[in-house]
Image 1 (cartoon, helix red, strand yellow):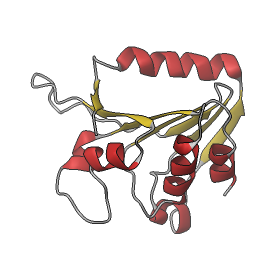
Image 2: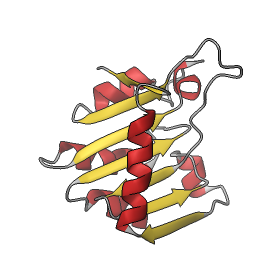
Image 3: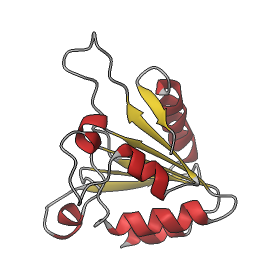
Image 4: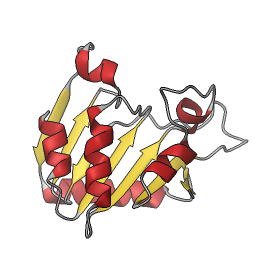
Length: 149
């Protein structure tokens, strides 16, 4: 897909945020290729509950994601005891090279890519993308914790 070509062609950075991420997603291989390339920084934000509760072979845990993308920084939502309900990561976007952002309703799964009716918007706007990246970085430590492989 155009999304995967965009990710594979990244020159400096790819930042992904999703509720749920599955190995069946074509994005899995595109991110693996990007994170393996020297000079491309990859960050993945994912929901802890979606990834880590009720483990299944088709959905990797946050630890498995971190292990399978050793060149990437993986962040999961923190369990904040006072927060009811728990903090959830439901944002779905991909930012590439601090320039282009794809905001989508789709989770990163084969069903979303092949069977669901989803909506996405691709915007080439470096100031907007940098603003979103900055906001996500500010949430690190507050709402997200780094997953160490």
